[in-house]
Length: 394
Image 1: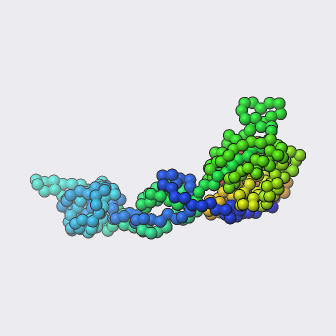
Image 2: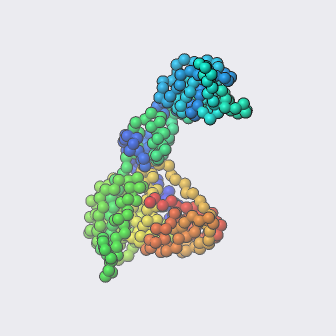
Image 3: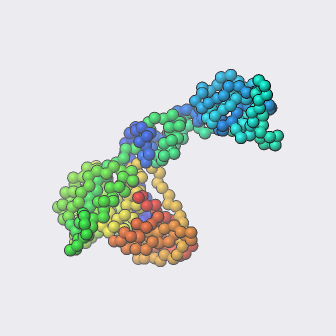
């Protein structure tokens, strides 16, 4: 199966298992995915208001001055008569009859005896406002009932601010699915310097944080030896909507994930991908609809598999739109390798994408220095070629 087909299949598998909705305060919504669109509860702005500090004016200068207007004052009130002006703060309600707002730097106040009036700062053209200038009209940004943010959108800080401005206190979001993590391998050392054939466990310190960034809630995190019974038991006892495993997904003498999946009656949705690194990946579904994402045991392969396939599964489960990949030009030639799609850790430079190096399946140094992964087609790609880029969700 091609890497692109695998991403589509993974997304569809997730989309078949969209999680239920829940209402949360907007202050907790950053990073969450909307189950329902954000509908404006009021027009934006809710009334005509000033976009500048200055004066609301009507008619031609000079203008007689009336009481000032401040942000927070009630809108409406008495119309502004011709030849009159009122000092106004940014955000203050513009009274009926206003022609426009004269900017503070474009006006000057004169005072002679008991008479006080406003005039333009100079007689140069452009000092006085054009009709409607510097006035934010009611509803110019949004009207009441308008959908401001579509369902499936991820709530960013500006989107949360927009929802608040539109009068919302709560939003309906997709519940973040629980995700269990199972790290396989008796050779893993959890602290200190790895010696005597052991290797440091690089998954337990980082994957919970990555899983959280994908939009899941981290559930049970456990480690099991490369043993069929231990592997099958750990998989069978996971109750989360999604279980992510690392290691044991190939066909070696100590790879027991495939047999454990069969033991729990899971059906394979993806069984290997034509991609380097990451070809032993599997995605399976249990009879009750829960999914199991089986990542390779090599660190680079596992992390790029999670970025490419895991992200697609979670996006589907959260009801997000299937994300299209951006593109970028290459600064160097990247040759084919093994007739499969290549995922190459790379950095953006002034001349284009440049591989970071250290891209063996078991390496981490190149990924630690990467901005993205360049998606290189099976035939390779030359300098200046435009290729897809895979975002890295960490």
